[in-house]
Length: 599
Image (cartoon, rainbow, N blue to C red; front, side, top):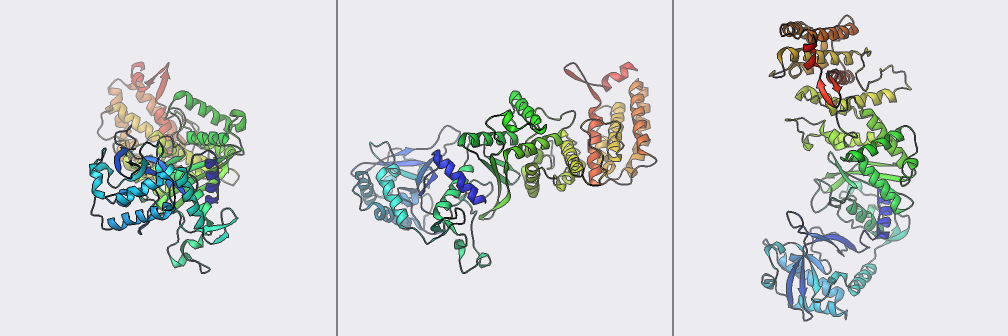
């Protein structure tokens, strides 16, 4: 299914001339050697992109027949300098053999051609001496070990773009067809291939590329077939799926179809009635995963998702977004020389948009801890990593969590239990009770409650904003803890070295009965201190709030709270903490700063 969808995507790209035709590949080229009709080398042209801080190779579509591994194999009309020019920066133990293979390949392919450009190229190879390179105009040490193409002096096109050279190359490919058989991707009887090109661009995979289809052990073979003969795929389909995949993985700011979610490099594409509708769907999905920073665009996306969540058809909101557009999402992760499929998801655009809208609603929290639409998935994952001075590192994100969270968002299923456990553990360890972490706790709980609505579960609804009527013990204890912290700050100010949150948050959320009696005893000192500082009004309000919350808890504190209740504790704490602030006009003013004056 994955390879079939990729092969179909290649057909769409080929119709738009965005990918190479069979027998060619998009490769990084740095320099061009210019030569005369007599075969004399003239100069070196630098083809690199110099618009950035560091020159980068440019991409050209050049002839390629198969992936080069450990053996010697030369490419037609281009190659790295060890092959094409017989020079390299290092020792080059196989240098002579590689250059000899390059010359032999060119004479074998084009030796019988009468095309003047090709005859001049063969004369160049016949006369070439590697020590000539350093004497050429435009030479620098940067040339070494880069890919080089060739151009006849006075011509605009490069030699690999010459029509006669391309005709000869395609004819040579067709003459070397393999054993015919039924292709597992297309179902057609066609020459089968065994050489699957390297897939490049997956983060942390080998720089030279990794394999998506590969057999290297007898355990994976059957019916007497060996290695890649076990994957009965035609040469054309191999070229199609691999070219489409490498196109999706291409680097560059213009590529919005590639996302990094944890350790999974995530790709997506659409299949619609025409390319314009497919590209509109892909742009919409890219925006869902990386919401725009522009306020107007974010508001537009938020409004669209709200209407989708309310049941309005997607096509009524945007004529370019068709409900039945088929959508594909593929997550790849490195696995030594191969690639692992972290997740694979296929659905129509309408359902996908509804799942995203539901995801944003589940994250909804008041007051909003972020501006605009909810944070992108990568920001949510960073919230599950340890916070060091307010910053988290990607390598600290649990690898399996990225895939499971992505699957939950795409399919509308339960969030991974590991998400709630991880967030609560992080809050207890580093004391960073951020809005995003609380929103994640709330999302996990509210989704589980909704999905359990048809069961016998009696789970209370998880509130979006402060719910003073909630009787859930976890939620009430979170509110109580926030008020105790409020009393400490009111008595001692904001310059306390270690607040009760720093010291007791973990124990209070996990084993309330062992901590809250101590905290309630100490709060009397804080309240007394506040009254001595003419903050009697604030002390009275905190004491009243504490009394109301404790009344809701019954006769005793719970000895322990489960992981779900600890999530509610975090939400109650966040709501109560944020309730201290009231908005007056456009400015947010801390309520506690005025209460003492009112008393």
